[in-house]
Image 1: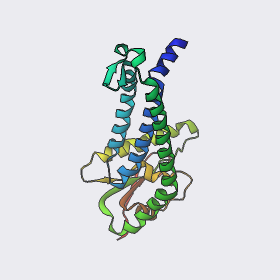
Image 2 (image 1 turned 30 degrees about the vertical axis):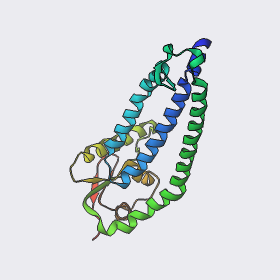
Image 3 (image 1 turned 120 degrees about the vertical axis):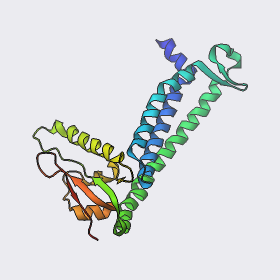
Image 4 (image 1 turned 45 degrees about the vertical axis):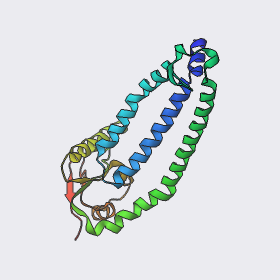
Length: 218
Protein backbone atom coordinates (compact mmCIF):
# COMPACT_ATOMS: atom_id res chain seq x y z
CA UNK A 1 0.00 0.00 0.00
CA UNK A 2 2.86 2.38 0.79
CA UNK A 3 4.39 1.64 -2.60
CA UNK A 4 1.04 2.34 -4.26
CA UNK A 5 0.69 5.78 -2.67
CA UNK A 6 4.33 6.52 -3.47
CA UNK A 7 3.63 5.66 -7.11
CA UNK A 8 0.54 7.90 -7.08
CA UNK A 9 2.71 10.74 -5.83
CA UNK A 10 5.49 10.05 -8.35
CA UNK A 11 3.06 10.05 -11.25
CA UNK A 12 1.45 13.28 -9.94
CA UNK A 13 -1.98 11.63 -9.75
CA UNK A 14 -2.71 13.18 -6.35
CA UNK A 15 -1.71 16.64 -7.58
CA UNK A 16 -3.88 16.19 -10.67
CA UNK A 17 -6.85 15.26 -8.47
CA UNK A 18 -6.38 18.38 -6.36
CA UNK A 19 -5.96 20.61 -9.41
CA UNK A 20 -9.04 19.12 -11.09
CA UNK A 21 -11.25 19.51 -8.00
CA UNK A 22 -10.20 23.11 -7.33
CA UNK A 23 -10.60 24.06 -10.99
CA UNK A 24 -13.99 22.34 -11.25
CA UNK A 25 -15.23 24.10 -8.11
CA UNK A 26 -14.14 27.48 -9.45
CA UNK A 27 -15.78 26.82 -12.82
CA UNK A 28 -19.07 25.79 -11.18
CA UNK A 29 -19.10 28.88 -8.97
CA UNK A 30 -18.52 31.19 -11.92
CA UNK A 31 -21.20 29.40 -13.97
CA UNK A 32 -23.73 29.60 -11.12
CA UNK A 33 -23.22 33.38 -11.10
CA UNK A 34 -23.04 34.05 -14.83
CA UNK A 35 -25.83 31.77 -16.09
CA UNK A 36 -28.64 33.53 -14.14
CA UNK A 37 -27.24 36.90 -15.26
CA UNK A 38 -27.74 35.84 -18.89
CA UNK A 39 -31.03 33.99 -18.23
CA UNK A 40 -29.26 30.65 -18.74
CA UNK A 41 -31.40 27.54 -18.24
CA UNK A 42 -31.15 25.55 -15.02
CA UNK A 43 -30.20 22.39 -16.88
CA UNK A 44 -27.03 24.03 -18.21
CA UNK A 45 -25.52 24.30 -14.72
CA UNK A 46 -26.60 20.78 -13.84
CA UNK A 47 -25.12 19.50 -17.09
CA UNK A 48 -21.81 21.21 -16.33
CA UNK A 49 -21.69 19.63 -12.87
CA UNK A 50 -22.45 16.18 -14.30
CA UNK A 51 -19.79 16.51 -17.01
CA UNK A 52 -17.15 17.60 -14.49
CA UNK A 53 -18.09 14.77 -12.12
CA UNK A 54 -17.92 12.18 -14.91
CA UNK A 55 -14.56 13.51 -16.08
CA UNK A 56 -12.85 13.14 -12.69
CA UNK A 57 -12.03 9.42 -12.84
CA UNK A 58 -10.90 9.44 -16.52
CA UNK A 59 -8.57 12.33 -15.70
CA UNK A 60 -7.00 10.34 -12.86
CA UNK A 61 -6.55 7.33 -15.12
CA UNK A 62 -5.00 9.52 -17.81
CA UNK A 63 -2.51 11.02 -15.33
CA UNK A 64 -1.61 7.51 -14.10
CA UNK A 65 -1.01 6.07 -17.57
CA UNK A 66 0.73 8.99 -19.29
CA UNK A 67 3.61 11.27 -18.40
CA UNK A 68 4.48 14.63 -19.89
CA UNK A 69 7.98 14.64 -21.42
CA UNK A 70 9.92 17.19 -23.52
CA UNK A 71 8.89 15.08 -26.52
CA UNK A 72 5.20 15.20 -25.56
CA UNK A 73 2.92 12.72 -23.81
CA UNK A 74 4.27 9.21 -23.41
CA UNK A 75 3.10 6.15 -21.56
CA UNK A 76 4.72 6.13 -18.14
CA UNK A 77 6.14 2.64 -18.66
CA UNK A 78 7.99 3.83 -21.78
CA UNK A 79 9.82 6.64 -19.95
CA UNK A 80 13.14 5.69 -18.40
CA UNK A 81 13.76 7.03 -14.88
CA UNK A 82 16.69 9.20 -15.99
CA UNK A 83 14.48 10.78 -18.70
CA UNK A 84 11.53 11.50 -16.45
CA UNK A 85 10.73 15.13 -15.67
CA UNK A 86 7.98 14.21 -13.19
CA UNK A 87 9.61 16.23 -10.36
CA UNK A 88 9.66 19.38 -12.52
CA UNK A 89 6.06 18.72 -13.57
CA UNK A 90 5.12 18.31 -9.91
CA UNK A 91 6.57 21.72 -9.05
CA UNK A 92 4.69 23.36 -11.92
CA UNK A 93 1.46 21.68 -10.82
CA UNK A 94 2.00 22.89 -7.24
CA UNK A 95 2.34 26.46 -8.51
CA UNK A 96 -0.76 26.03 -10.68
CA UNK A 97 -2.80 24.70 -7.75
CA UNK A 98 -1.76 27.70 -5.63
CA UNK A 99 -2.68 30.08 -8.47
CA UNK A 100 -6.11 28.49 -8.93
CA UNK A 101 -6.72 28.59 -5.16
CA UNK A 102 -5.88 32.30 -5.14
CA UNK A 103 -8.29 32.83 -8.05
CA UNK A 104 -10.98 30.91 -6.16
CA UNK A 105 -10.46 33.01 -3.03
CA UNK A 106 -10.49 36.18 -5.12
CA UNK A 107 -13.71 35.16 -6.82
CA UNK A 108 -15.31 34.25 -3.50
CA UNK A 109 -14.44 37.66 -2.05
CA UNK A 110 -15.62 39.49 -5.18
CA UNK A 111 -18.89 37.55 -5.28
CA UNK A 112 -19.61 38.14 -1.60
CA UNK A 113 -18.67 41.80 -1.33
CA UNK A 114 -19.17 43.16 -4.87
CA UNK A 115 -21.41 40.99 -7.05
CA UNK A 116 -23.94 39.93 -4.40
CA UNK A 117 -24.88 43.52 -3.40
CA UNK A 118 -25.22 44.44 -7.08
CA UNK A 119 -27.50 41.46 -7.75
CA UNK A 120 -29.72 42.65 -4.92
CA UNK A 121 -30.04 46.09 -6.53
CA UNK A 122 -30.25 45.35 -10.25
CA UNK A 123 -33.68 43.65 -10.21
CA UNK A 124 -35.18 46.78 -8.62
CA UNK A 125 -33.93 48.91 -11.49
CA UNK A 126 -35.53 46.72 -14.17
CA UNK A 127 -38.71 45.65 -12.37
CA UNK A 128 -40.90 48.20 -14.17
CA UNK A 129 -40.19 46.42 -17.43
CA UNK A 130 -40.73 42.86 -16.19
CA UNK A 131 -41.32 40.33 -18.92
CA UNK A 132 -44.89 39.02 -18.76
CA UNK A 133 -43.48 35.54 -19.47
CA UNK A 134 -41.30 35.44 -16.37
CA UNK A 135 -41.70 33.55 -13.11
CA UNK A 136 -39.92 32.89 -9.82
CA UNK A 137 -40.50 29.90 -7.55
CA UNK A 138 -39.87 30.78 -3.92
CA UNK A 139 -38.33 28.20 -1.56
CA UNK A 140 -40.99 25.99 0.02
CA UNK A 141 -41.14 25.71 3.78
CA UNK A 142 -41.13 22.43 5.68
CA UNK A 143 -44.51 22.66 7.42
CA UNK A 144 -44.36 19.23 9.04
CA UNK A 145 -43.17 18.53 12.57
CA UNK A 146 -40.35 16.36 11.23
CA UNK A 147 -37.42 18.64 10.36
CA UNK A 148 -35.89 15.86 8.25
CA UNK A 149 -38.65 16.40 5.68
CA UNK A 150 -37.04 19.67 4.58
CA UNK A 151 -35.45 17.84 1.66
CA UNK A 152 -38.94 17.08 0.32
CA UNK A 153 -39.85 20.77 0.11
CA UNK A 154 -36.54 21.51 -1.65
CA UNK A 155 -37.16 18.63 -4.04
CA UNK A 156 -40.60 19.95 -4.97
CA UNK A 157 -39.13 23.38 -5.73
CA UNK A 158 -36.38 21.84 -7.87
CA UNK A 159 -38.91 19.73 -9.79
CA UNK A 160 -41.12 22.76 -10.50
CA UNK A 161 -38.10 24.77 -11.65
CA UNK A 162 -37.00 21.93 -13.92
CA UNK A 163 -40.43 21.65 -15.52
CA UNK A 164 -40.79 25.41 -15.97
CA UNK A 165 -37.33 25.66 -17.52
CA UNK A 166 -38.54 23.40 -20.31
CA UNK A 167 -41.27 25.87 -21.33
CA UNK A 168 -40.19 27.82 -24.38
CA UNK A 169 -39.93 31.64 -24.07
CA UNK A 170 -40.49 31.49 -20.29
CA UNK A 171 -37.92 33.27 -18.14
CA UNK A 172 -37.39 31.28 -14.93
CA UNK A 173 -35.42 32.81 -12.07
CA UNK A 174 -32.73 30.44 -10.79
CA UNK A 175 -32.95 28.73 -7.40
CA UNK A 176 -29.83 30.58 -6.23
CA UNK A 177 -31.47 33.98 -6.78
CA UNK A 178 -34.56 33.16 -4.66
CA UNK A 179 -32.79 31.53 -1.70
CA UNK A 180 -32.77 34.90 0.09
CA UNK A 181 -36.55 34.48 0.49
CA UNK A 182 -36.30 31.18 2.36
CA UNK A 183 -38.36 30.46 5.48
CA UNK A 184 -38.21 33.00 8.27
CA UNK A 185 -38.43 35.99 5.91
CA UNK A 186 -41.69 37.97 5.75
CA UNK A 187 -42.84 37.68 2.14
CA UNK A 188 -44.58 40.43 0.19
CA UNK A 189 -45.16 38.83 -3.20
CA UNK A 190 -45.49 42.08 -5.11
CA UNK A 191 -42.27 43.46 -3.67
CA UNK A 192 -40.48 40.18 -4.33
CA UNK A 193 -41.72 40.18 -7.92
CA UNK A 194 -40.42 43.72 -8.38
CA UNK A 195 -37.05 42.87 -6.82
CA UNK A 196 -36.60 39.83 -9.07
CA UNK A 197 -38.00 41.56 -12.14
CA UNK A 198 -40.67 38.93 -12.85
CA UNK A 199 -44.38 39.03 -13.57
CA UNK A 200 -45.31 35.97 -11.53
CA UNK A 201 -44.28 34.41 -8.22
CA UNK A 202 -45.02 30.89 -6.97
CA UNK A 203 -45.15 29.95 -3.29
CA UNK A 204 -46.92 27.45 -1.03
CA UNK A 205 -50.05 28.76 0.65
CA UNK A 206 -50.99 26.09 3.19
CA UNK A 207 -49.82 22.91 4.87
CA UNK A 208 -50.56 21.21 1.58
CA UNK A 209 -48.13 22.16 -1.18
CA UNK A 210 -50.26 24.45 -3.28
CA UNK A 211 -49.17 27.37 -5.41
CA UNK A 212 -50.42 30.85 -6.11
CA UNK A 213 -49.48 33.10 -9.00
CA UNK A 214 -49.41 36.88 -8.63
CA UNK A 215 -48.57 39.60 -11.15
CA UNK A 216 -46.53 42.69 -10.55
CA UNK A 217 -48.37 46.00 -10.59
CA UNK A 218 -48.18 47.91 -13.87
